[in-house]
Length: 65
Image 1: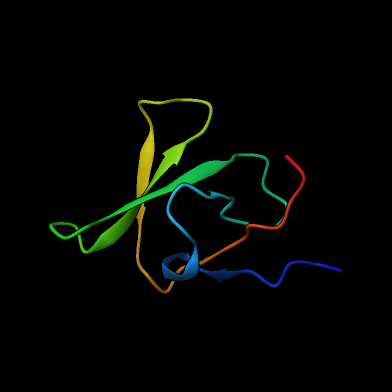
Image 2: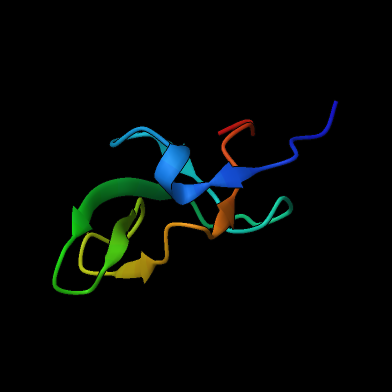
């Protein structure tokens, strides 16, 4: 059964996610940043790398890590 994905705002804070279903890069969902109006996602492998995603961005949480 393939993961259909979900919006970033539906993912619980601290949960692992990937941007695409076949991606190898794993992120951790962070807090909502009011100044950016986006959700912060920290790179699991590199603590100095993060990205900000709009709330309606589709991400994937069902994968083997």
